[in-house]
Length: 252
Length: 366
Image (cartoon, rainbow over all chains, first blue to last red; front, side, top):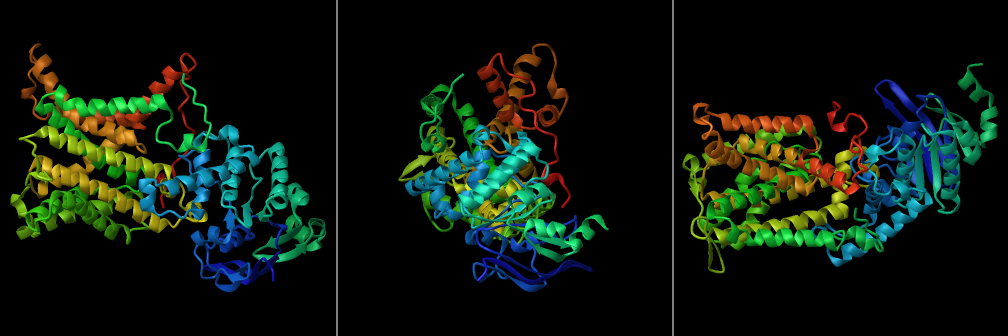
């Protein structure tokens, strides 16, 4: 049984078939990268897995269960977290508050006990905060702890978004272009973090990325996507030397 | 400058940052409790009214400031609160202590009725819808003549709790203390919301819906909950307001009141409890200050404002416009700047509070 799998998934928007008959198999504990030119359907696949879109045909399975009937807000419950290509943080809140939102899924309190702020709410709050501080230590975010997102640089925001996804304690992490807009140095840090996320936290990573250096460095397997179809799957080297991929990228 | 060393997670969770912070609020509370011994009945009544505005402001703040939904119809929820607290007492013979929370719940119920079908509406569209609802409520009050007294209005009985009488004219002191008590209860409840997962869910929904979804937040449910809590608080404020003015009719809760409430929290500073209170003070005290100045200074130098009808409203509006133009973060935002200036003196930089220019998501056309 595979961990996260897409079976013959197709979605069309009006006349455009953004994803055509795509099948993917992502194994537990691997880093899987989706590459391809703009408009190939990479982000659409992400939105399909996180249920923002519903496929017209095909099935998506995670951990042996079908995702077809689930809603986007059910995803963190079953262990799927994601980041966005254009950062979607909570701008009028501090870094700490942003990360704490990630702990909401594990709360057991209802709104009445939260208004009264009972002892059990406080206890849960402390556990959430311990967890969030660990994530902040891991990503080196302590210096920005009390800073508002509005005032942070683009690169830092990207990392905060990664941290917020980690605060969900997911089994699978979907990273949508994590390195876009990052400097070379920041991208290198990111590469280490992604590897640590896999090795130390044991989280499976699925990422969309244009930066092939990063993909080569961290990815275990790569799928190349062109016009909504997968044209090549395998280890980074073999995909990059695949004549079909070269043709799609350079047009030779 | 005071530096707070955090030694436990409770430092971040507690209501007060440290002892000094705690003592400041204790002094404020003691001052508020002692107010009846300091000022005369007229001013005490005005302060009580400001507290009622502040409660209503907190209600609207939950919705607009924290969950990002604009309502131009909150006067309707005040009306529901005011009418139901009176009707429950006079028609059903329930005691005040039961009918007050019931009035809040009824208002909250109407809020849920509106929130469920409108969960997908945003910004200006939601504002228009709530405006329509508030006009509708006004009409319903007139039509439900046998229950509400129609155009003639309704008379609120004296509040009685365990045979203690609270009357605005008879003993304003105890009425003031009652309102103060309810205000403090709501402040603590509101603070608790802000420091719990619920408050974070509210701000998540406000700032980015798509990532709120990705963080496992059920948006429709959260928005409905915000509406319910907001309408509960506003309903209670309306109930107190009804008892405070003793006689009211459908016109008391017209659209102008809704707009005033919204203005109040914008001037006070969106997204903070302080904002609701500063805004209430402006709305409540500014007319008094203007008329005080008119009576005491301007007459002396020979300017008679009586010759310019409506000048008070004019001055009032001018101040509002200036605020919105020059201090979009409201009085609380200005207060934060002044405080930071003194805390960091002489290291304060002028651009410290400048934010990156970017368009808010709510300003994008959806």
